[in-house]
Image 1 (spheres, rainbow, N blue to C red):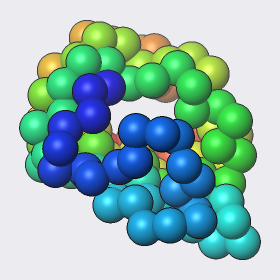
Image 2: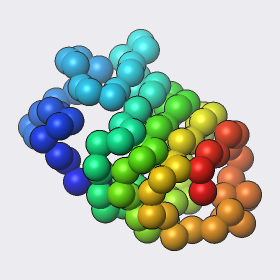
Image 3: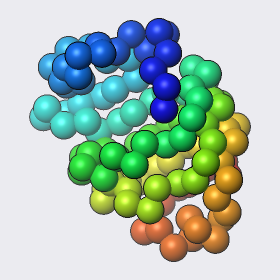
Image 4: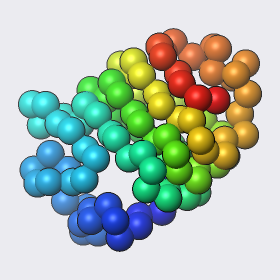
Length: 105
């Protein structure tokens, strides 16, 4: 994904749990939620989400994200909010994933 200025994230790769990062919620120093709706994000979902083993909720709704959905996803995902984007995958692809509450495709 692109990194628009409205996120305010540190480019230096600092720890999102060690300081405030807009849209990121942590518990016990682990990322548990990413809520980045309606921020005009573009490009595709990153394929590096799988190591976020404590991530349970991902809200990327109402952006301009496109492309497919990565097959290797965080193991504890419970809710995806993906509506109002430009994803090209089909529901059939998502039906094979062991996750709950996929909203908006």
